[in-house]
Each structure stands twice: as C-alpha cells, then as structure tokens.
Amino acid sequence: MVQEQNRQQPGQKLMMQDRRRVELNGVTEVISFDNKEIYLETVEGMMRFAGEELHVKKLTLERGEVELEGKIQEISYHQSSKEKTAGGVLGRLFR
Image (cartoon, rainbow, N blue to C red; front, side, top):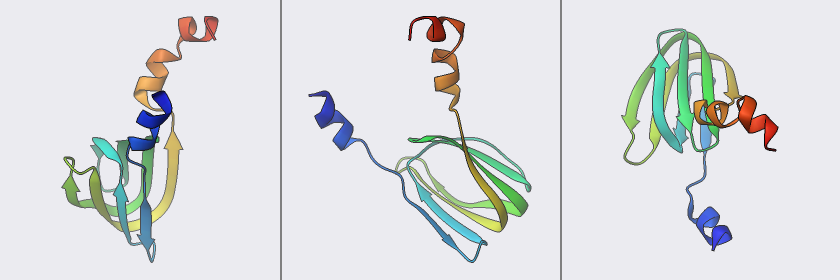
C-alpha cells in the first residue's frame, strides 16, 4: 500500500530555456522571492534560484506549477523546512 501511494505522488519536472526562463512543476509553496533569489518548497525539497532580474511570471499552486524569468545563474536544492524539523537533535537520536 505504501509503494502504491508513492507512485501516485506527483513528480517534478524542470524545463529551462536559454537560462532566461524556467517552467517547474511539483511546487507546493513559494517561500520568498525578490529580484536576486527565489525560494520554493517542492515535492523534492526546498529549491533556490539565484540570478538577476528574477521574477515569478506565472504561479498556479493548485496544479503545482510556476514559471520564472530573468538571468538565472544558479539552481540548487536544499533541505526542506519540514525535513529540518524532523531531523533535529531528537531526529538524529532515533535514526
């Protein structure tokens, strides 16, 4: 039953065009954004986009989709805020 639930969870797809436009699905929350950094919570963890003149062109959280534009210089995954909570001192003790 657990395996069946995992297969039904939506995946994540990232498409980038010319380092100027990104289409991403699997987004669950926009954490913060400005013209230099955009932080998103996704089904694969926290994601950070860094660059210049960044902006969120389209956001559809119901479908988990976002489109970003700007000069993209860096994309990175980070530990999600939910994983940090579960992975504190007590989380490490009981692994």
